Image (cartoon, rainbow, N blue to C red; front, side, top):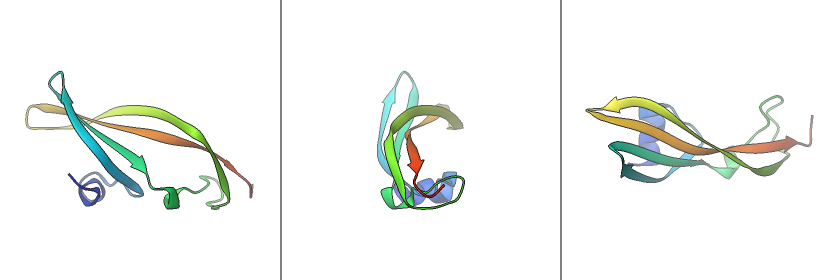
Length: 82
């Protein structure tokens, strides 16, 4: 698995692959945002403060008979521009 596969296979831009693990019959990919890709969702400014992450996991399309889950920390940010 690589960051390139995340982008071309799942369309995840600005995230990097951390690890994958297997458990309970499912495959879980852990990704995290690249710090330089963080911007304000309203004004797209880069002058932001990060206030931790909210961890989320969602199910994706299965590969073969294995259910796939993507796990990531969604950054909580505060924009200094808007």
